[in-house]
Image (tube, rainbow, N blue to C red; front, side, top):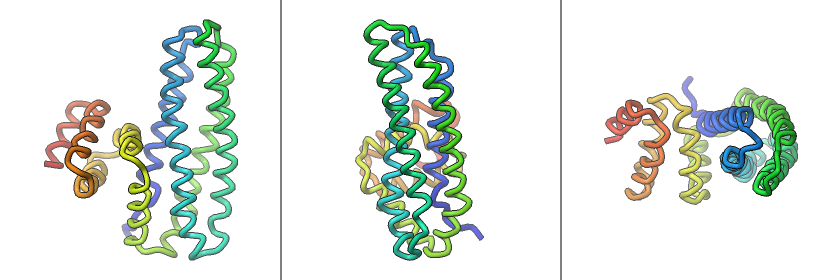
Length: 221
């Protein structure tokens, strides 16, 4: 049975984002201000979409599930709170590293701690997303039709401003197969004003290989 998968699109993007940040945190020269700034900027983007995703799940997906199945959202919400605490600590450490780097300090020791702490956080987060896909998704299929699940996704997309959707594209689109990209962006093309759709394509053009983007553009034309 081919049901709509609530978590496929955002989770692929988040796993890509976490992997990018982990890689950059490990290879950054923390005595080089430009490299630290690049890590700081990527970290801000990654932590932003992590926060947005949790808020969207709490406000839409889990809120709707709780109405149909009281108590069923409790575990995921508790996970979100624990993740938020760990993420907040990482954000504070990264801000400290960036501030000290601007001041001309060598932040190698704090950088090593950030890399290790982020690795622990990434493991925690990946376990959470897998559990949502193996457990929560089954509950969503039990209590909602695919049309209702699609409506949840539509509400989430509608509540996010354009710049947030473009940020998501940076991480989601490269993490998908060609078929998945075409499906997602065909829907986006139908609902988005033409200038915004074209703006989205420009963002995507910067992050896909030339042949991948050409194949996508042809499929969408």
